[in-house]
Length: 438
Image 1: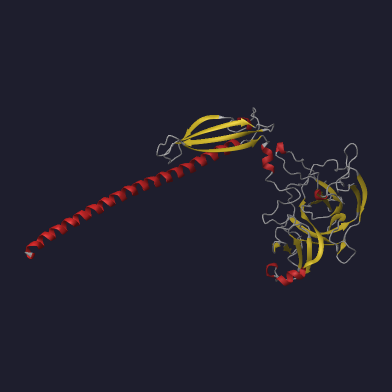
Image 2 (image 1 turned 45 degrees about the horizontal axis):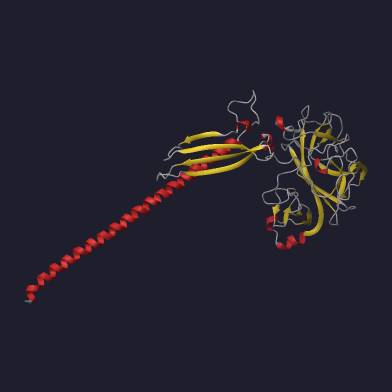
């Protein structure tokens, strides 16, 4: 009997195995259906992300287009392709289909005047589209901005360096510190004013003031902390630097001087000049008509190092011989004083070559003008300029001065003038010069 029952049990087991396989297939089918749904959602999400990125790019391009105006009002001379501020108006919806895109974007621009009395407009760019799922509520991106009604010429000016100095370094150092100085740490910069010497100047990065001087022939990058400490705090001074250029043409060319450089040096002289009368707050005093009051002042110039303070020392990179190919000379001077807070006065002149009015002599001109537009301080004798504007005689200088430039021309030529700043006609810098020597 037992042998006859064995085949029946085997048939039962085979049936159980088939049922298990069917159940497993059913479970797998549900899993595959869920996976297909997940993949569809992921694809839709990636699609929307790509479309939103395209919509953002379209919106930003639309805002850039309205900002790209070259004139305020369209005139007869305005090119047909040029944009003006008056062209910034609302526009009806426009459909855009970028290349390789799977949808079409609808772009609407709305322009309204500012709610206040300001001169400008508010602009809204709205970009909408229908995603792959075809949802009843369209996807959209909206960007808003305000555009001031300002002459486009002024936008070009912000890219220019100030006439009396460079734009502040990205490193955060005071712009008076020479660009090739080594930034030692957050507080200090080290500068070797002459590659032929061992003198090292130490500057405070925040104020631009000189805070140390020493002699060490070791490369600046190789100085030890101990050597820097020995140099720091040993001197107090103000930096004065600029460039000397040369022109032999008639008339002399102040914008693009072409002549080769001369061997030269610098010296300080005394002089009398008109100095603005200051009130208790250090501001210029004015009379009832608003004109700045001035007082006569006699400058006692610095003396070379070793003499009565304040002292000065100067370095330059002028050629050792001639003729040569060098066309400009850079100079740097420091006026020293043992006390922390001090000022200096005097006239800076160039030496080392003959000055005079003959063709065999040279005339020294200083790049100088009323750059800041104070106007009423610009006197007939050109002496009442601000110190940063390169006056004939510096008065009560209490900080660093940069961009104090000279032009050396033939003695029988006159110091050239140049057009004043005129933004409307594209003149962004005044290259006028004034005679300094003889």
